[in-house]
Amino acid sequence: MLFTSISFAIFLPIVFILYWFATKGNFRLQNILLLVSSYFFYACWDWRFMFLLIFSTLLDYYTGIKIHDATNRRLKMFWLWLSIVVNLGFLGVFKYYNFFAASFAEGLSLLGFKLNPSSLKLILPVGISFYTFHGLSYVLDLYKGRIKPERNFVDYSVFVSFFPLLVAGPIERATHLLPQIVKKREFDYSKAVDGLRQILWGLFKKIVIADNCAEYANIIFNNSANYSGSTLLLGALFFTFQIYCDFSGYSDIALGIARLFGMELLRNFAFPYFSRDIAEFWRRWHISLSSWFKDYLYFPLGGSKGGMLLKIRNTFIIFIVSGFWHGANWTFIVWGLLNALYIMPSIIFNTNRAHLDIVAKGRYLPTLREFLSMGLTFSLTVFAWIFFRAIDVTHAVNYISEIFSSSLFTIPYFVGIGLTPPIILTIILFLIVEWIGREEQYAIAQLGIKWYRPIRWAMYYAIIFAIYNLGGSEQQFIYFQF
Image (cartoon, rainbow, N blue to C red; front, side):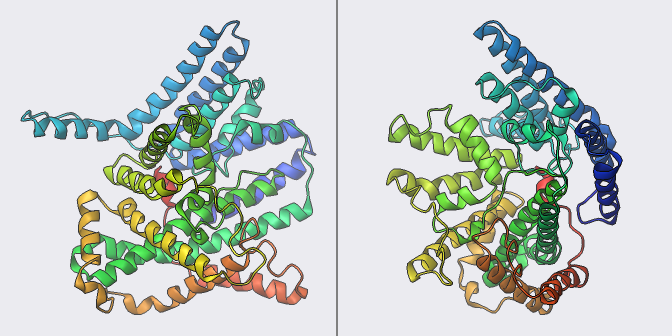
């Protein structure tokens, strides 16, 4: 059930009305409704994987209580590692078994041994990486003593499976979301209106920008051998905006929906394409995942405390794992390595926290230095996205080789290029709106708030008109595959 589908447009109002009116403000009944609704939402994808979601929830619920109640450190460690091994075991089988088996066979073939490993014909359960990380953060926080176990199974299950974030995040923390789940929630009209605005902007990003860009990016990437360097560069740019508007659009919709139900989710994007260096980019891109790896992997490895070599090692580990989290393909690992290399100057020269503020804060335009820094960071990001999108490493290398050939200076052309000017103009308008709203939680959070009411509503209707009339063909959210 896609957020952009008619079925979801029916599902959401029904759950909203029941949530605020049928439960009469009883948060226990509200949580039961949210759990049932979330399981129904997930079952609409593939009911066969419900057992995996429920098993993962039961595992972490039970081991969490055992960790807290254990009388000695050794017993706590046992229950913690049971949860980690089982969770990552399921994730490994469904997501990585075929990759490891094929890679192992290829490695042996280089040594002269022939091996034909059997592959498993498994469908990747949607959202498995996200709800697995929800549960792992819960048991890890319990082990560290940051939280106490949630003994109400319904409340804990809502934390794991809350439908706005279930299949593509953001990756929530028990320290942030559980306290909101276990207390009474009052309807806040202003918060609900703000949520609807964020949903509207998320739908615009997904349907108008991402889905249109996807059509052209797919044409170019899937037939890259037939096109010039200039056309391939255009394809890389289309994918760059596709993946940002697709994923941040999903996050906007998820955060907006949560606000309708009186809850706040973690922010996942903060205008990353306006970053002045790669370190800033990663503070603004997929924030919930970046912070998860920082807190549960980077710091336990020693963080930045053990000297420069340890800091460099830990940084490479983080980015390689981040690449591998995205998928079982060497392209994602190369993408992670590239970003690790990009960030090395900031690590070595200790400038990784040089840009903690918002670019050009309080000003209409950036300085020339800021503009050039954003341009360089954006260009490096576009280059890395080619590996992310490519079928395999060979495809990516060939794609890049053609970009850096003399054909880069030709006029871009592919079948259908005559239809691209409207979407290019829309992207430019989108970037202007994002730039204007870069100091807010999302681009249109304050846009038009003080305008004369008919003008403000005209803006909303213009966005709705664009969604219904300028959207591309329906595309599944990219991050569902992760």
